Image (cartoon, rainbow, N blue to C red; front, top):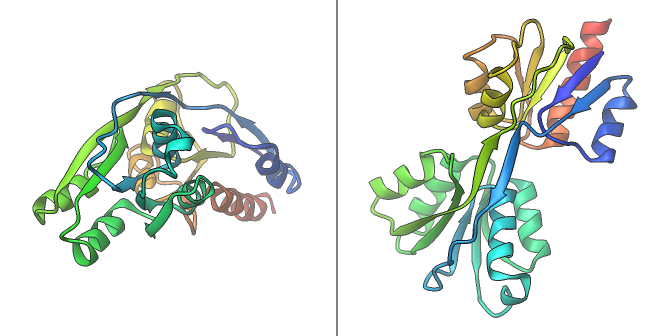
Length: 223
């Protein structure tokens, strides 16, 4: 059994697969370029949609300036929350999906103002929800996604996808054929559905959960 990860995995993450007798190849289907816009100092409530937005934010303001400003974070994803807290940023709300976070902002913090940090390929849920409910926010693009188009000759038993743009990048040069598409969440699965019906969604939107589903599925398939 062999899988392809469309994101470079850590040695620990690769070991999870190899210990289950699954060979793994990995690459970054998307290259990230961090931008350096001036962060508007008026805003103290910041919406982080990914670890990339956190990394970009820290590159712009510098970790030493985090303590000088009483930022409150509203974020998508457990890993995003973890990176924020490790860097001394207080997380007030965390959800697994952007739409869920938007609903919390509307229902619990309707009078607050927010700085929404995102990539250039951001989804519409958060800004459209906030606009429709007249919640004041400013949007700033802090990183760019660039597809990394590679062609693979191997027919993989599974492909691990972690974003809709990762799916788009892979299928630009490759066919999913009979590979199982293991997706980190529903939005990624919606993009994969354009190319295959053989899709399995992770129980939680984490890399580790994607790996667990791949192991469970491919072990059954192998037997």
